[in-house]
Length: 286
Image (cartoon, rainbow, N blue to C red; front, side, top):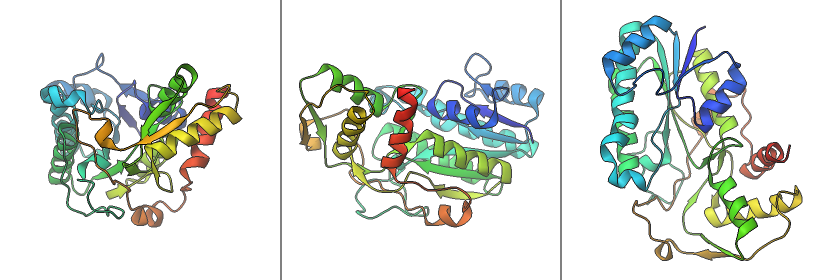
């Protein structure tokens, strides 16, 4: 099976390469233009993959509010281009989306078929990408929604917190946005499984459990001290979102229901987010 990964600089592509091997073809902006249908099709036609995993995304949520065109090109147009290529070539497409396609008002875990109602540019462009995929390639694609992704590679909340906790006398962290942290390693595993088995459908993947950003930060500090990544604790104060206004609106509750994922990907272990966080921080320590 020939698998090509779209994206070569992010957390997910890093973890995909660790699973698939160093010789995995990962296409970055220097290799092709995913926002240009003809350029992308020409590149992929030469490689003739049987499966494509799309790990490319515009994820700067606040910056997206002033950068709609580029955000839409990467999160929606590129997905449409990939789906068109796959429809023409017979390739299977695995695509990753986000909890931000939901409005965050439900108050209970979102099902895969719940109505999407994104609140900001990032979520809206990811929703447009989903729609294009499901309209063009409903029977030859796997859509995986995820949330709060981090890894030992790249920039993310965990590494930002560790840096700030080492430098600041205290921190304030939002406690009224609820979701689930997700180690990119587990996300990569489900993407690879979907690719290898050509698992069709819409699925949700996060680690197990529920947390606020405040809960997440406290766990990062506790484990950071335990593993020697931090020398001492600082006060971490809970604050409401209203005290930390941002350009983009974020869902207040975006826990994803993973019932269908447990049934379909039964060989994969869903693990509590704190256990996964500990394992990732072991990598940072190594």
